[in-house]
Image 1: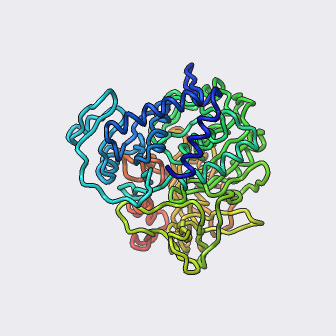
Image 2: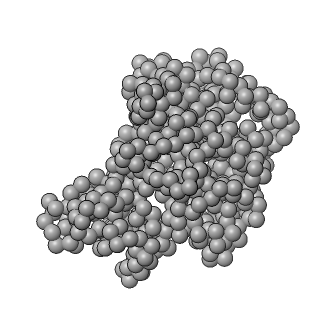
Image 3: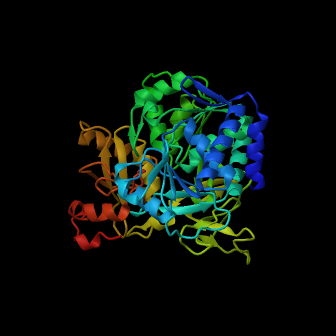
Length: 502
């Protein structure tokens, strides 16, 4: 057991009878967690489990099994429920899973798993890709391609992030954290479980459907607001679209609990105007930034250091610098490597440093610093250059558009074009073209001319995994969108279709 993992185990044991995990009427103390994790660790040892898929809904069981895997040095592979069956099967096969914890889906019937005990299924260990030494978690990023990519992490990296976040949470007086995102999401796993447990706080859990979360993008706002009222949490982690719903509900008069002390938002670009709307409502919202390759959170705004428009200051364990092209490079907690790839993938050598001596992790994101605060522009590979030679990061423009009440999703394209075109998904079916036009004008008012959505189209359907226009967790598939809307964009601009290119 690594020193960082042992420190978490000892912290759990030391907090004794404090409430640690709460799900509905069931509360488990830290002493109870310590005992239950030891029991599950013994079960895993008896089963000879090595690479374990964790496929449970949010709840106390998920946390206990995950801690048992961590403390036992076994490889945990969280299986996101929002992945498609094909993506989940890819996870199982590529990670060489020998043990499955959770209900076994029908589509895995031919994979050779047999039930060993209630809710635990095993198969003869398959031929598996080698993993870097020290790997205790393989977290899969959905990316923008069809197959998710496995990021191999050790306990030290994950808990370095958790320690930094734990200190910030304690400074804000956070004693109750409500997990809104799936625990299979690395961000909620580390910031919503490890960090509160290190701080001796209570982690409040509920099945996702009870909170109002369905799949990758389904949301029942009334259930979410009801969960907040019922649990009175001090902290939450939200994606930008969840924050949009929360702010919109508050602006319409819905009461939010006054217990909230820290609402972290990340996972995508957040429009500054949305943050200002939250600030006007008195909501303690703080934007952050991270990536799986760096074991989640890298930067975060806090009450002690906040700048709207930035993703905050680097966490205490992190060092940042910019490459010659403005790419953000990170040193500190970082992955051991990608599953199935040579060690050092994604590493940017700096000053002769190797991965083993703590080299720099290339993020693929562009940014700049303002008085130490990091401002992220967007993905390097997504940047386009207009016909007038101006560089535009479309995520910036899309975030401004999507924070307008009338617009649910936006995709912006302008490579080598004289005018940028936005394809818009309205927030409701009865939204009129006039309302969309007004929303575009409002968003454009906050943008320089070269980045504005000069023309727009109404999308034929929402962008989602079912039509191949977005990933399972909502990231746009830009190549697919271009292929789908190329002819429509050409017609709108009255140019040949071959002039609309990537």
